[in-house]
Image (cartoon, rainbow, N blue to C red; front, side):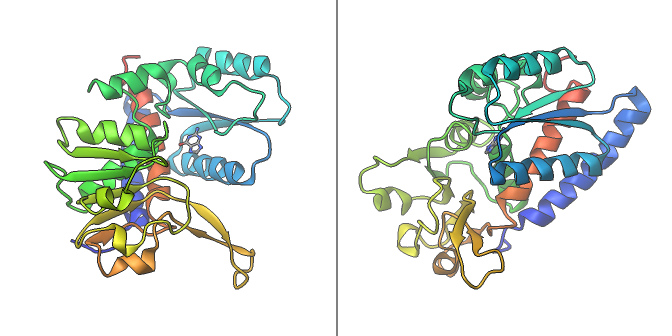
Length: 293
Ligand code: GUN
């Protein structure tokens, strides 16, 4: 097994495959995958994410549209924009970048998206179907994690997986996925109130960290040979960097490297996989591979 699980190169290969499939979809069925982005406010990280997702669409020849709304946009305006995209046959995926400004009811917005266009997999229909093992849109980061484990040749069958973090975007869906019969993992989900965290993490064959705490996981958290998936993307001050900050994960990479069996770097690990899986879900939606069109 390669020690560094290179998300950048795995995602590049995936996107190449997807480009070929997209060209066929266009030529044979006259369908161009279409993705709509909605972003509200000026959160710098959200802007960067939406820009890279738009660029990925361009590279694959997808149709994409970005609606940039002011931070004080009304909930009603946002909901009616979603209604328009729901009714637009050229749009196969709708992505509302989170977090939303605090005056907007995030769950109401998520539930307004037609679940058949919910390429983020956040709608309760998709979250529920994921849990009961039915075909659905799977949230992109968990889907990317599974793809990385598969590429790295990691066997999840019967293994102990520890998930740090219980978010709706990563922790809960990745736990549900790994419990499915296809993966057959024994999953433990830890969070801020978990007692004796190290006792749990040190029993894990695979550790998935998604808590948003820079360099939180140290070598004494893991057992020898543990496979580490680092989902964290944290900005920390760094006077040596031109920008004044650097990006680091939830895992202390240097400290854990010698002891672990394999690890995903940050940046260049889970991040690029998330975007590739979003593109795949949009393709699948356009092709009618998840829900009939
Ligand atoms: N904010 C952070 N991650 C995500 C994501 O995967 N999708 C959306 N829509 N917003 C996010």
